[in-house]
Length: 553
Image (cartoon, rainbow, N blue to C red):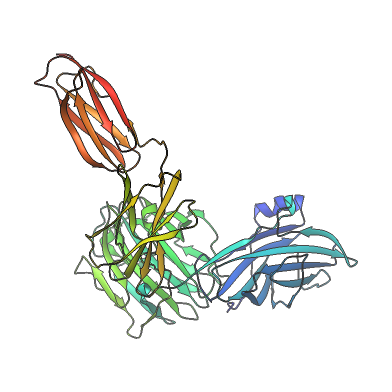
């Protein structure tokens, strides 16, 4: 359902002025990233018809037959109106095609100023969809200019590509905040690095404040996040915002928010679905002990929260952004000290006591929280590959199916086994080498208890002549009596590393067994050996290499 609209005042971007010199139309789209299957969703189009001689502008919306345009609204200056649309035809394109007619003689509308179209769609049993657009300028019943949904130079209108997900039971329940309710978490501990708050949020309708960081001592708000009446996120902090990016929030869809707040550097960065939306400074300094985070519902309809986590975070931002779709993940240099999901929470600080309204509800969640895919590794032996994987979805995974492909696209099952709720268990399968193909691919299909499916990344293995390792020259060389031998493994493989004398007798075996991908170093001590020339060799099932070194006492 499209939200109620009030007067829309939009700032004309410089890009519009540039476009005005080249073409009579400016177009930009905003659309949701995470869409549950069989859902209703909103798309916002920002546009402008520059001065032209056309009598009418015919705007076309082209979708798959499983996506249906339900409602369209036009917002321009002081005009907010429902648009009349009709199913139409445009060239030979298939699918559902809708046409909206804009008449230049309509004196209530200034088409030369920036406007927005709010489109609401219904989707039916579709996993992905392209929504395309076209525009015709009409004068005296003739087309005088057109913009196309396919590449045609400057007259190309970019399409929207959407993917739908099937909610998994692992999401369980979300917290529903009705109008006027709040949910507060006092930090009560000093940050060694920075506070990182992450959560999923879904809005139905309305606008208003939904998140704040508050100075408990003064009760001053450090900053707040709001949803404005035009469905865009805005920030309010009283300070100068260094960077800001438009982000449209559609109704009934989930969005993920990451807030990195550094009370020592006085910096805040806010990401929504991996995009940096706000970056600003603070001018007041205070301890993280003195703050609390708070969720509000100042909207006119309920909002929903899921998977709220608080971290003392000291890793790269990408670690958090890449794991937003999982209930659990680890960050090597960071500490998760508060986690709230379903109707329970975990904290490493007993003094942290959450405070929320007594009538909040916990309802079934359809947030895009998924079980983790298994980690897969392939080890090369003389005549076979050992495929190994681990279960990263304890209590969720039911069965593992190992699949193989020779083209990276078409996979066939070669093995299956039941999943066990044992984090230490390694699953194995030995697959004989097939030298008829230069490449093979392996992946694990995880079938969960709710019958949802998660695929591991595929692993590509070369079966012809390929470089498996890079053997470095020992250092120092000449040496007395110790030297370091290094090898970089490009694949995980069985390897043997040994030192030989000038006539080929083995002096010492430095390694015999699996070497994982990465750089490995080995120390060789020749304290009991005479000066002279020696050799060191690495052998794998695929190739071998020998290098010379000199012992000079």
